[in-house]
Image (tube, rainbow, N blue to C red; front, top):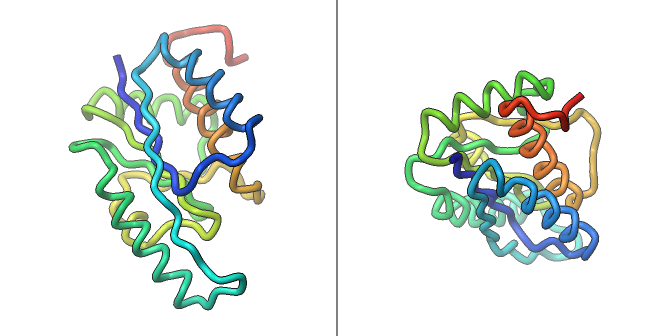
Length: 159
């Protein structure tokens, strides 16, 4: 059974986002062991400077890298990452999960991820060229993982 770890910076604030993630986590139980690890976001002033943002991202990056399971294949979600079709991502996810003890997905803060995390990642993944609210990324990621597992197992969810 695959092991997936979702590492996020900051909590899911909206109950409906938590409910969506919980529903997909329940569905994913048939395919994998899923763990969620939350890193505390660094506080920034209302109008932070680029230097303040970078310092916060670097500090969060240290915490993120500590949270990555040993030997895990690391996937960082970032806008400049690689885009996949659902089918091609399922193939890539299966290859990563088959060759590593775990696959860790990282979602940064609303300011993104530190360059260190991106450079350490085995794969930088972009889910779209569009911009989404930060709170939506966790439900989107859960759905992507579930769809991939369904494709891998030959299920009917993906049409």
